[in-house]
Length: 227
Image (cartoon, rainbow, N blue to C red):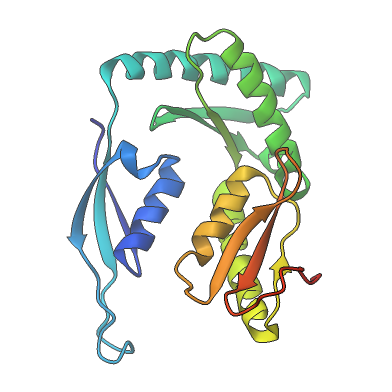
């Protein structure tokens, strides 16, 4: 069991989603204690309280040893890649979250590794995952971040998803996102899950990159409009 961490959001569900995102775990990998359920206040305008939860990550002893070993291999792999680029004055911070290896690149030049829409960072993450897991009996998922890009990307996707959802309802027709990887598509689905006026569905050929179609529930014609 790890140290407890507290999260706050508008309601309990959003606080849990925030915890999952920041800790890179699912709800099954957490012990959740609701400290404050939150309230909307008078007429939803004044006196509202944020929801507050306390979270502990759950790990089995055997998994902990494997995760620590995988973390060490992943960190060493990333450091060697940075030396080959080369990237000066950068360091790698390594942590375990829910059995995953989370590597954070820090330094003045770390932002150069993000690339357009995070493609460079994603490519480095893919390479590190392949190399690190080649030497492990049980697969470990490696997440690589720089300048808090992953969280900034998540926030941007949520805002874009909400705007697209509003547009779909306004024009009464489906709209589609650009091609997204599985992680980004999940963020879109979660962002609009509570909107009872919308449906979301991933579409595209088999492969990693697909689009998400956002459809008003009153709409019958499934042909998406371009945005």
